[in-house]
Amino acid sequence: MALLTVLCYPDSRLHKVAKPVAQVDARIKKIVADMADTMYEAPGVGLAATQVDIHERIVVIDVSDEQNELMVFINPEIVWTSSETKSWREGCLSVPEFYDEVERPAEIRVKALDIDGKEFEIEADGSLAVCLQHELDHLQGKVFVEYLSIFKRTRISQKMKKRAKELIGQR
Image 1 (tube, rainbow, N blue to C red):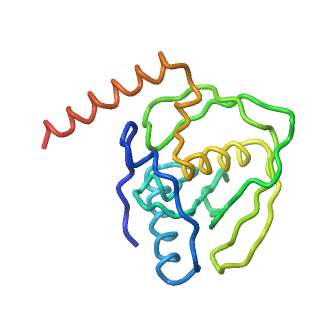
Image 2: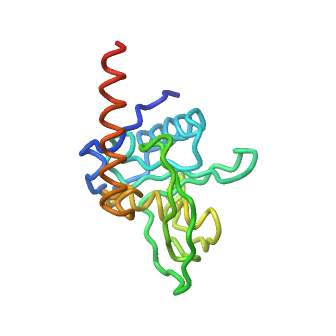
């Protein structure tokens, strides 16, 4: 398995819309395995393929306390959302060290393919619902900071650009 490089905001590649996976084959299974390794190593609870510069509709999630319940979503789509919303403090591997409140539907239903290409549906609430919506946003080219005010987005973007320059200068 390989660790993949996670793109950092405001990298324009994070705004690419992911294409559907045509077939769940060995290549897709390797991408899923590499994404899972990358997510666990980070450490994170979710990762969308867009974040690792793979623009296909693939998401891995593990919101378990022990980080031992990997969930794979290929070609996921939200098929239902509750009218009730809830605000959660979110973070993102593509926006390290920044967290803020985002309001989202409290419950959702997602349809997807699993690692074997079988279709399934799952209803989610709590942290799983938040994580799914967050990762599916990535597949649409949207980063959680885009829910924030323009002032906060600008500040985060400036800090991330400064951090990137500092990292380049250290090499």
